[in-house]
Length: 358
Length: 201
Image (cartoon, rainbow over all chains, first blue to last red; front, side, top):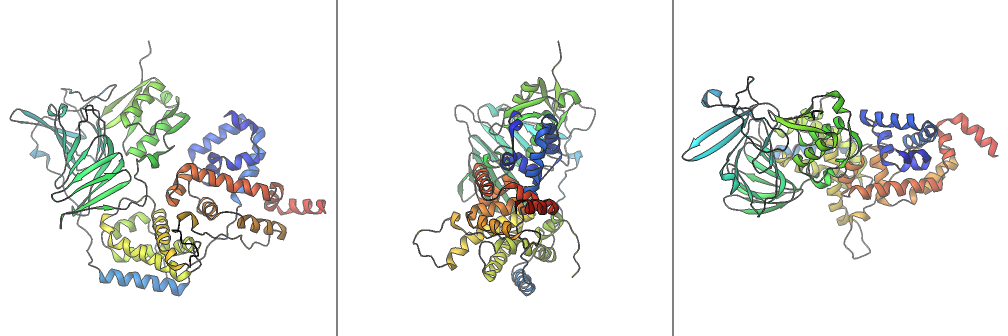
């Protein structure tokens, strides 16, 4: 913050935080700049001048499309629609399996500290958000984690990889087998953050039609339309996708689509950076003396998960860190250490509580 | 024509489900914005109209396979920009034999015809704009007119954030060199300016 002490109009004008705040203010930046000017009130006049300049850069707005041109545009597009095969509104997916089918023990998974998969034998009082079924089959023990909630569910795997499971989806894996062979079956959609394992143990996700193999990376698998297609989007790293007929290598910020009717697997251009790619998160996860609640809300938004802070005093503690390239659990580790707290995974959401004082 | 104020997200979902009417509403809603952006790359209105049409037609074909979209406007602008980059070189007479580069893509901005702006200032602003590169002009357009965040501008223009920061910095520093801020600040409060003007005289 010391830099603001000698700021003049020109300095404010090229300060990206200041410009961002003037053009697109929000609660966080409002609070930040209030603090800055409380500390350096004599900078206010220069800041005001800079603000007025920014707000008054007048570019002549609005070249509107001539009316006749717009009519032709709409008509031509309409023409194109009429000539192409045209589906009616798709029926809603009604997938939820009746709970009666799963006559088994449901256990709540509770974790403290490092995100290591650990069994807890207690039966929860509330209905669990992530329904976990253990199926004993021959000598193997398969875990199926089913997301019965309407919000995504955070599921850790034994190797510290992490899955954010979409509603109405489930994953299935063998816990003991996982140490030597990392294999997961997925039905529905999920986001995966896979840890590199030494010696190079690939992580394989099987879905109904595709096999996806990775070494260490993050990617998302989604079902599209009325299950007429599946899409795999890669955020970081490299992934090998295999269908019955084709094998494709997919890199960061690329995605592939598999169409069920003709079994084709093809790469698609992406218009935006993948949401958690290194390019998209550049500087999003750079924090300078940021409050814990701010940091965690950025995390929650980006990963699409829920994170709660148990204690309002804890929420105020600040962090300075650059977290962009770390996987989620590494980010949580670093954050917890910085604010002297610990995090727990409860019912697929993260809860942060302060360390016990001596 | 009466426009129903429907949320973009709703229209988008309906369009993805195959609702042609929702789709034409989207076309109508965004045609001006896309036309304004597109014609800054080329004054050829018909060419831009064709590019916009292509963007929407491809969108319709791929409606079931589209990713989730956080901003329809941003998505369409980026798609249009990509298409213009591809189409424009086909129609321009190029003297050089080099491959067209995205950086060469022209961009046009103008100063508003505002009677409040004194002629002297207006001339300075016009020569300022003339001295800017196409990418600097596009940056000013996207940042100060469309109010996009730096990250979004970077994604739209296919640059990394540092490049965007540098572009903005150089553009604003060039503005500083050409025009002193006192006279710009005076623009905002005309009474102050008149006093200043007379004083200088």
